[in-house]
Amino acid sequence: MDQDVVEAAVVRAVHPRDEMFTSPDHYFGVGRSALACIDLALRGAATKPSDVKRILDLPCGHGRVLRYLRAAFPEAEITACDILREGVDFCASTFGAVPVYSEDDPHKIPVDREAFDLIWVGSLFTHLDSGLWIEFLDAFRTFLRPGGVLVFTAAGLAKYRRELAEYKKIGSHARLLAGYQRHGFGFEMYQHLDYEYYGSSVSSPAWVFSQIATVGGLRTVHFAEMAWDSNQDCYAFVRDDSHRAEVAQIAQ
Image 1: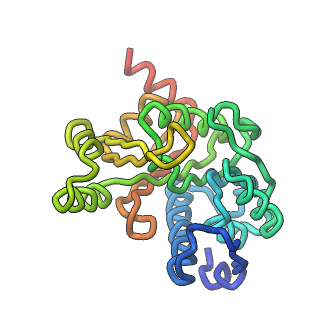
Image 2: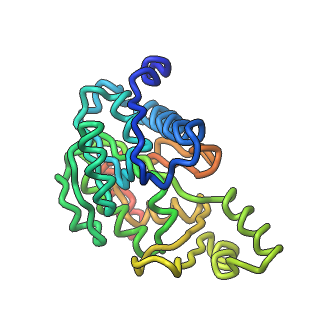
Image 3: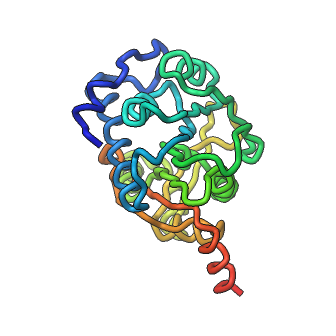
């Protein structure tokens, strides 16, 4: 991807209620960083950008990353999906995305199965407990066409270190830290939101790859710690149903 060409094509309009917008430099930098992660994932999968015809951005928010997807893949059909309906509507009207309102149950999300060449999942798993990780990973696998690429981010060692420093100061996040230290995964519910399942998670690469093995059918093509915005870990997988069968055979 020609970064200069992409940057010149990025739509700069920002929704007035986009909570991710704190400063232009950081906001657009996060979008550029996501595209860099996606570029490496496609290279690892030996997928040409020109072969990416259908993209799913879930959760799309107000288009912090989707605007870069639109600039980098101008001919692709991009689906914007989120429980934040205002964000979905904004992505549809501003970036020409296909609007889809998400569901709490990932298998009920109304998108086509075996249809997407690329799925970007930025900072969703950072808010889910372990059971929902499996549910969403399995759903994303079914959304991908065979050979399609899934790219997602997760909070790893960088977040653990931040939360540990906070704990030493004021004693917060004890449950999250204990879970990470014992099992490689920690989760705490948010207390101020309506969503019963929404919280904060931290996960080690070993734990994440164990979940991938449980789901099956996803072959690793890229992993990098702190790759998204110098903060979240980035994982990339190709849907490979033969890999699913081989993993199941080994498990037996």
